[in-house]
Length: 155
Image (cartoon, rainbow, N blue to C red; front, side, top):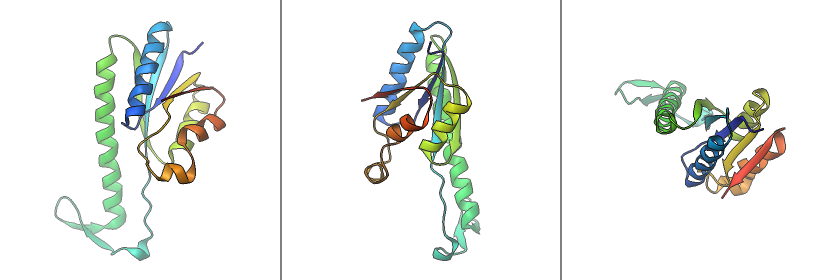
């Protein structure tokens, strides 16, 4: 029934609870597999508002778009490392795949779930976005409205 389980993961306590719930379910459902997905917000900077040169972490001057691209790559590598740790933690009890991407979380999660024919999304009711969540609406709510599969929201 729920053999393809997607867990959007941002490191928040709600994402941790969702992951634990998904692992519990996957242990009960023979042949199931969890995909843990992290979506990193894309940073878009209007070039007119910022200086054309910034100091990179290497100490060299670089352009702002290059600096931001490198910053996002670093964030992706760090999240991939974190997801690898999680995967190792559960490797003896459930099958886990990991995936990191960049963009608007609700769009990327819904697109992935629909393209990969996910059976169940297990996600936290709140994430790390803070006050912006109140303005634009909850990611979990938006995802639940845009996917074809069942969505379990964990509090």
